[in-house]
Length: 543
Image (cartoon, rainbow, N blue to C red; front, side, top):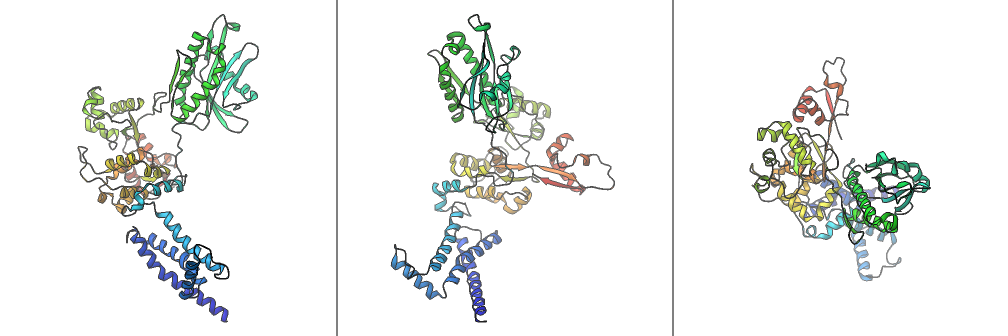
């Protein structure tokens, strides 16, 4: 009975200490920048958890404040030497360490987060760098797009046709990517029939012996001359990338250019037949330079140097079709919308470029300049082909936007921060800023508050970005362009009914987005969304 009473007394003491500690930690959190009432529940839960982890171990280990005071005196007297087990009990040291660790952990977890105003410790580089190191490399939301803008070059290989052995793999860098047996399985594509000479050849699926899947990109050449056995010399310098690379097409013109150089060198200096041993060093230099800087300049002979450069524009393939509700934005700095640069363009492009602001969609631009939307789309598509503009999704308040892992990188990029603060400020119709430049901590907090399950209209009511001098449209468009925020698509799904006379529900199965539906039915995505919402027979999947 006495033991039960002691246990009950201990529980009551722990509960009392935890309850009394909650307001103390709550006030402390407010002093360090937490909002007073707008986020009451998260701050309260934080205070409650910290109170339990800090005070309960101390309450269990020390019977009174006097005992805790004696413990601190012993620690102070023996510092920097650790007190012995005779002076202090081990569980007392453990309890004190656990409580202190809870406070330190809470500080480390929050010191680099911009709160209601900038603190001195947040303005230094150390917390930002510490934040970048601690930040999870995964996305802040469950489904993040893969960053495959420029696929890394795995290696290169040089193959030729031997008069006695047939197709042979002469060099590969790094060595031993493909075995002879594996090369023989696709050698007929690397050293093909004459019909494929001077054509781009790509082997899209090569499962190697290390279970990795590769692509091989080549441009076979055949040189006719009596000095070669059988009167012909066939060779191919190939690039090797991973199968998962989706934009490896940017290597295609580089492969063609490399083989053009080798053709010229062989015809003028017999480089491949007499100085072939220089190829491994040449290939290694190309790999290192393209992977590190995206370009390279390599001297091959006294008269010839190779100049190679990767370009991520769409010059190598047909750009995607442009829908009337895509939003064009300039991807070159400076943009082509000032008077001096516009005078160098055709009349149609002059009118269109002057209205591109990253907010208006193609149909909106067409209405502004009073030109047919199809002509505007064709003109903008041509600008996209030359890498002048790129496209953003149409801004709608019914959309859901979420932050990606790139948001952490904003901390260390002062140039991007300044550009962001200038762009997201409220502007007038003439594009001039009409409010003071926003504070970075406010803008970052707005970005961090975007989350799955919250429509932008709900986010706007809760966060009210206008009170910080921030235009929510510009805020979203800037972040999507720099890829630290992305839009989640809405996919309508029709609910089953006994009688159905409409045609559109047949396609509403969760596979087609609102944007695609709008293009298909020649209507605005916002209007289509409102129509489906009024029907009441649809649910929406956000992903």
